[in-house]
Length: 190
Image (cartoon, rainbow, N blue to C red; front, side, top):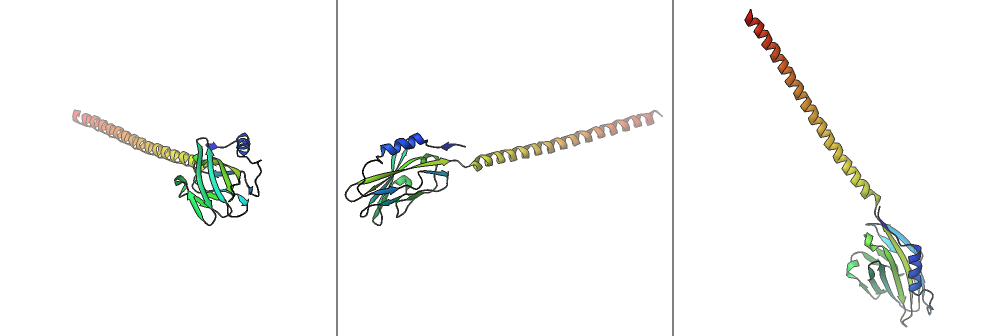
């Protein structure tokens, strides 16, 4: 089973880099679950709650081993800008959370949410998303392989049984012919 997991050192580094210790001027970002795990083709909810004065701008980005990708930017109730690669897979919620549908292994990584107020002050939150492959896919391969091998071996045993029966039938015919031939010879000599 392949799993892509970010370790605690990576999470600590990301938290420090995003400036979570800087003053926030009235913006509060709460991350209930800093690590979220999902299986390939499932949905993952990246939960966040925020408090700020006025209507904020919420921006989600993915930090993966391949770089930083913008996912979605929106103001609750006003507009949204969803990245093309996430367009059919993302659902945003009023509290700032997002749901990512049909996750794949390359969706694993750190997700950074930035809440910005009208004055320009912002605060970040980080969630690590771990993605694993389902076990049943491996089991499915084993079951299909075993079924094919059992079917082939059953067919081979059936054909060997038919071949054996044919050989026995030929032997019985030859014995019968040799008995008939020796009987005919004895009769003709008399």
